[in-house]
Image 1 (cartoon, rainbow, N blue to C red):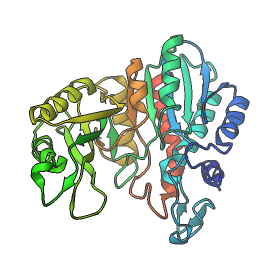
Image 2 (cartoon, rainbow, N blue to C red; image 1 turned 60 degrees about the vertical axis):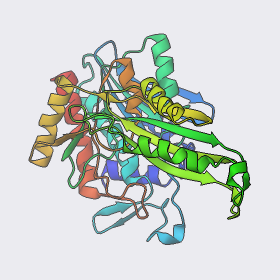
Image 3 (cartoon, one colour; image 1 turned 135 degrees about the horizontal axis):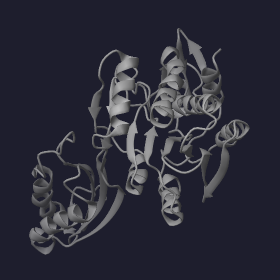
Length: 376
């Protein structure tokens, strides 16, 4: 069994449902310390974060990942226990196999190989891990980035190991991500009997035109490789369940995924202006998950394109799709960020898995990127 498969199995066997790291980072820290890395454990609240570095000065190339996973759901729905890694027909099954313990294991192997081959490499190579990517993402990389900003820690290039590939390893290069902005809107009315609507004020009836305008609005036409900004209403709740009572309050949840045409403050102002224009009595709470980021053409993006073309046999698609990732906290530090990882078809699903052939190639892929950027 190859080293990367063995390490991935060891990580999967630790039930790291967010934010529990279950000793993964300590295991990794011991390996990297033995390879000559300086180790810093950064624990905030219940979240473990690891910062491991080798070398000095710039440029700084950081590999970014997470050890936490989403809950497995009903164990009986899986073909094998989600936290007992199992190899079947050239595929490794287990929660986190693709998202993203396979990439984390590949990072570790690649880093060990890189410093063994280039002990006096220029600049700094680093690994940043958190146990709070799948959860609230408050005390993870967001908090680490705040610390880095305060102490002047630079990061020039960042490679995130999120599962980005679609059909084959290396067929997609993620060069940015949309921002995410969530709202909890409460529209206040006056409760009453449905037979006497003149004595009540129905918040559902009042809110529908405003919500329709928000949902139908074309916010922009996209931005370079970004799709147009999108607003999606995800939940509506009002009333007690009785069909003869006009509710006194409506709660609406919605989310905007937006490109670099916007920032969160401007979107909040635009949405609130529409709500006010419809005369609603409302309160709104906003949660800013992260601003959009985009890595323009440059050394990191060009190198990644060439390396992935060698691994997949064709130039990769360059995309900004998908949800969010922790790179949204690293990009504002001035770093160019890309995302490269295994096929994402099974992530967050029952019987999550990664092809062993892909897993065994991942360390070579990350090693090639490091050598091209720092030792080439």
